[in-house]
Length: 109
Image (cartoon, rainbow, N blue to C red; front, side, top):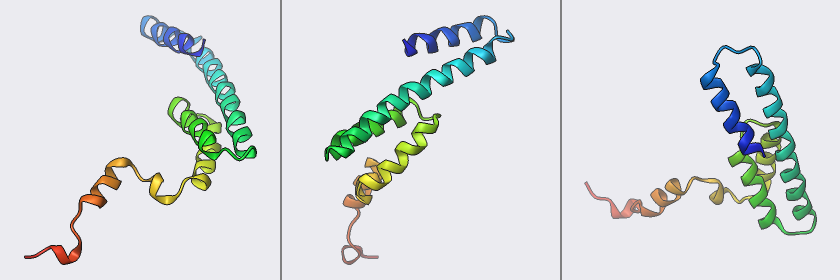
């Protein structure tokens, strides 16, 4: 599994930090991540084509969460930018801040 490969690479880097094969293993791991992200992306696109945008949003978000350094993550972010209303794109803390701020007429000096 991909998670096991990530753990093994981390341990290998800790045990042998200057080993010449580390770069090769990192490249292989990056390729694996791209493949996994691409499969999730294809699933998300399927849900978009079948008029199930909420399901596609879940898959695009999963790509960004699990594989943020991939090329597919960039494509996923572009799709999310189209699918999500502006308000939903804001971090939850920003939405809470805006809703808790008093209106201008409520403030007094």
